[in-house]
Every structure is written in C-alpha cells, then in structure tokens.
Image (tube, rainbow, N blue to C red):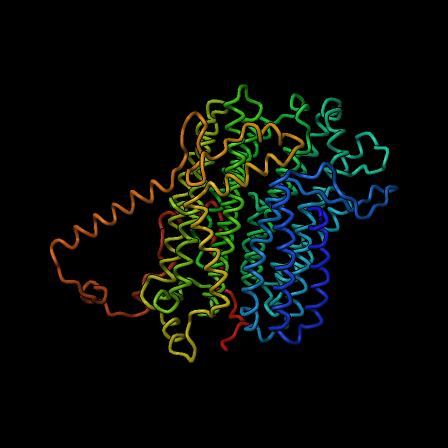
Length: 640
C-alpha cells in the first residue's frame, strides 16, 4: 500500500509530467485544458487518499527520504501529519474547481497562448504540495519556494501586453524573494547554532527541533531573532499588514481569475502553514518554559487585529472587483492570525480551561483557513464570470446582472454572505469560534477582549463592503454597459463548465455553515495526528463536537453554535411572515423604481459603487488603500 508520503511525492511528479504534456499540447487549447484538469484530478485523488490515511490511522512515525546529500544537509524528505493533511486537502480542494473552470475560461484569451498558462499552473500546484510536506527547512524549502514563486510570477503577468500586469508581477517576485530570504536566514540561525546531527541532516525539521531547547536556554535573543525572521517571511506571504498591501492588491487583478482563486485560496496559506508549523511544532512541548509563547501570542494577536481592520477598511474603498477581493484577503488573514495569536497567548496558562481555549482558538484559525480558501476561491470565480460577461472589473460600470446571470448571482450571494460571517454560512462558524476563544480567553490575556471587539466590528464592515459588491453589480438598475452586452449575440451567463465549479464551492460554503461539525471533526483528528511539538497538548485539550449535527460545545459548558436550531427558528419565522402577508389578500404588482417623480432613468442617475460609504471613506482616508483607476481594457479576453 502506498504511504501518504509516497502519494504526495507521486502527486508532485505527476504535476511535473503534466506540465510537460500541457506544453506539448498547448496549440490545442481545449485539449491542454482537459489534460491539466485530469492531472489535477489525479493528484487530488492521491492527496485525498493520503489525507484519509493520516486522519483515520495517524501519521507515519518517521519521514520518508527520496533523495539526500548528507554532506551539505540536502535531503528530499516528506512527512504527512495531521497539520500537513489539512493544508494538502485545501490545496487539492481549490485546485480541482480552478482547473476545471480554466478549460472554458482560458478559451477567451485569444491573444495569449495557453503554453504560458497550464504548464505554470501545474508546476505551481506541485510546489504547493512540496512546501506543505517537506521536512528540509533549507534546500528543498528553497527549491519548492522558487518552484511556487516563478510559475506564479509568470501567471500574474500572463497578459503581458499590459504594463500594469508586468509591474504587479515584478512586485510580487520581489516580495516573495524577500520572504524566502528572511525564512532561510532564520533557519540558518537555528541550524547553524545547534549541534550537528550524526547523519548530517542539519536542516531537517526534526534535527532543528531537537536542538531548539538547548538553544532557547543558551541564546534566547538569537533564537527570538530567528522566529522574528520567520514571522516576517511567512507574514509577507500570507498578506500580513503592512506587507500584504504592497503586493497582493496588484497581483490579484492582474492574474486570470482561476489563478487569483489559487493565489488567495491556497498560496497565501503557505504563510499560515509556516507560522503554525514553526511556532507550534518546531519547539518541543518540554521547551515551553524557555519559549515565550505568551509574548509571541500578544504580537501575533495585535498584528492580526490591525491586519483584519486595515485590510477590510481599505477594501471598503475599492471599486474594482478583484482589487476589492484582494484587500479582503488581507482582512480575512487577520482573523486567522488573531485566532492563532490567541492560541499562543492562552497555551501557557494554568489549568485545563486555558488549554481548551487555546485549542479552540487554533481550531477557529484552522477552520477559517479552510473557509477562506473555499469562499474566496468562489468569489474570484464569480469575478471571472462577471469579467467574462462585461469585459470590465469596474463595479461602477456594472449593474442589473442578476437578470442575465442568475446562477452566478446566487453563488456570489452565498460567497458574500459567507465571507461576511452571516449565520448559516461557513464564515460565521469559524469567526464565531475565534470570537468565543478570544472573549472567554480575556481572563488569561486581557487584550484579547479588545481584539475580539475590533474583529466583530470589522465583520460588520465586511458585510457593508459586500453589500456594495453584490448590490452594485447584480441588484442596481441595468447599466449602459450591461445593456449593450446583453443586446449582443451571446447570453451573459457563463456556460455550464464555468457554472459547475461555482455551484460546488457554494454548496460547500452552505454545508460547512449548517454542519460545522464536519470541519471540527476533521481538525480534531488532524491535531490528534500531529504528534510533535505542542500538537499532543492541543489535541488532548481540543473540544470535539458532541454529534454530527451539533455545533462545538464543551468549553465552560457553553454551546458555541447550533445551526440546525437556527434553521428551524428562521424557517418558522418565514412561514409566519408568509402567513401574515397572505391574510389581507392584497394584490401584488411589479412597477419600475420611483425616481423622485421627476428624474429620468439615465446612467447619470444610477447608484454606482463610487457612491457607497462616502463619509466612512473620508474619515478613514489616512488608512490608505485608495481605489485604483480603471484598468486597461483587456486585450485578450474577447467575446466569442
């Protein structure tokens, strides 16, 4: 039977082979697209099998070596534990709909060949698998990092005839190389100062971890500087304030929509994974006295709070679809970082209650990582469909798309409610978990209550932003551009091959919102299958869901969220309202909106995205994130 490590290694090799095949078949766009999807599906099958093996039976006792040069500490070693399994599952889960969506979406870039798309897409996916599973903190980390960065650089500049895209790609490349350098310098500090192992694998994760307790005792300042470099390196990658604002809002609008879905749904999660792996699994549990978990928790929780507020407030100002979504990725990463920071802050506390709250905070952070991947990938596919229909990312030029794109509108509504944290959608379940952990944990760390208050307020701002996003594009009166496009030879709603990925992701948002115990159970198993570092402590303290249909309960005897009870209450309220509305037998009629009795229905009288939240934008102008000017008209995405 194939081990999980061999399955991941086979997935990486399949991606490399698929890159060659799609490059050879690139003259036939559809064939290349189907080949890329089939390769992605094959790797996803292998990854899902590996994940199931680990979550059901636990992780392998040791990592598996596929190649090594002990003289320089060079080793291709892979290990799949519970934490790795969650991130591998997320990567495969987003790659499948993104690659399937690409088959139809990429046909319309007639001025650009797909030889510069599908091979890079598969190389990028293989690198993601490698980064999540390698135990080599130096050489193969560097190899997989560059294998991720360079293809993504090429994908961001796919429409290379636009100077703005070239600038965005160059900025991305520079920031990723800075992030890589910071992380590798931190690794060299820890590995160079530690004792050399007998096998010569000085950069292996297990070796560095074994040497860390002595290093924490002997050189605490040097060790702290290494972890600070890890925070900078992985923080740049995940979009942490202030680094995320430098590159992410330019990279997302430049890349094709499926690439944006992978960038924000998966790639920035390598930073989340790195922080969790290095801060919670690198230091052994017996080194807790020398490792300042509470201080790092304070730093990360405060940075997370600043990130979620600034990213969301800057998103509120945006008028371009994908730029708005990019800023919201920064904001949502802040929630993940807040939950993770709360975990670090609460873990050193005395008693089982502190440990349970720390585990709950980590569950919330991991759950929101999965949720953000799902609903943000869906939102970028929605934005791609809107771009396909209107040939613009400018929300001011959209309006009335609901009539012409009902399925895209429905899935965009689900994604908008999910990211806004509305009950019965997946974003609410994970945010609620973070809120409870931070509010109840304020007895151990008082600042967490303030962080939670800012996070709750920011969730309301997220809802306001998506009222603009959805309302300006789908609900307002039909714009002149949409009217012109609708009068053309083709319908605006995208075809079935672009609808199916959106529909599946929307259903997943609903499933995880109504039955969050699915995700809670997976994360609980993942922690139990992560035996090193603080994994066993968190796994033992982790509150498991009472049953499949319930929310999470057990911390201070409180039930955090019981979605089915809420479904029943809302259903009864709806039926009651329906019954009351029918009592009077009042006639119903459809009429045009009243324009104050004198204004003519014209484009100048239409309420556009620019008119939303003027006072908020004025008072928070000092935060930055001014809306970008409308991008150049796409030279490659044409009607067919």
